[in-house]
Length: 156
Image 1 (spheres, helix red, strand yellow):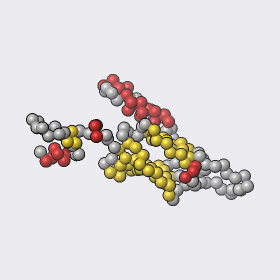
Image 2 (cartoon, helix red, strand yellow):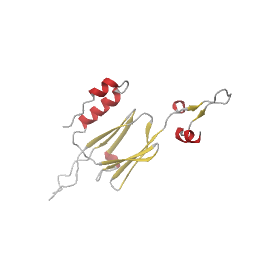
Image 3 (tube, one colour):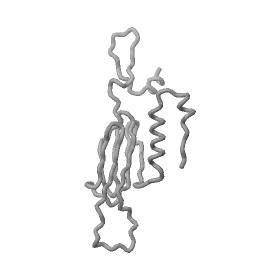
């Protein structure tokens, strides 16, 4: 088992305890179980999509729960009928639970199941109060939300 030692980083950083705890917990929990396989793709600056290969699962057999900073996806497959006699059983027919830690302000927008792929769309929505504000020196103008700091820096 590969174990990372974050002790040197913990000694020289302040306020990153949650990040190091998260990395250590993920290393412990994901000890080689890769079922079901999944992709995580970035679809924009604040949009993501998680795609899980859940062939054989029906929508009623999947349970998706989003709470605080955790997305949990569970699949509970019905038992195989005793009357069936398989010569070869190669399609995975087992229950699973997959967890994804979400950053602050990331929420699930929608989930779809098509062609054996479960897609979950996520968006990051930073509250207005948390966005950076442009302050005019000596002006009476109201504060304006800075949309893209890099573009404003280039224009200046």
